[in-house]
Image (cartoon, rainbow, N blue to C red; front, top):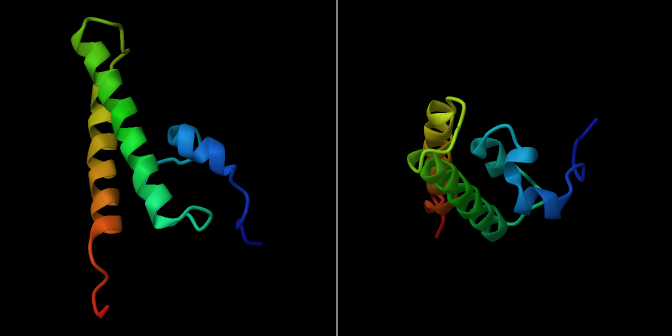
Length: 90
C-alpha cells in the first residue's frame, strides 16, 4: 500500500528530523513542493548549526557531534540534488 499523504506537512516543514530519518529521505517526499523541500532543508541546517554552536559553547551534547556532521553532509547532498538542473531538460 502506498504511503502517499501519510506525513503531516506542517510537522515535516517545522521539525523535519522528527519526520524523516535522513535529509535524503526528504528529497523523495511527494507531499512537499521542491521549494518547500529546499526551505525545509535550510531550516534543518539551521537547527543542526545551532546544536553545534551549543556544543562549542560548552553545553552537554552527549557525543552527537559525529551524527550532526553526517546530517550536515546529507543536507548538503539533498540540497544539491534539489538545486541541480534536471539533465535533458530544455
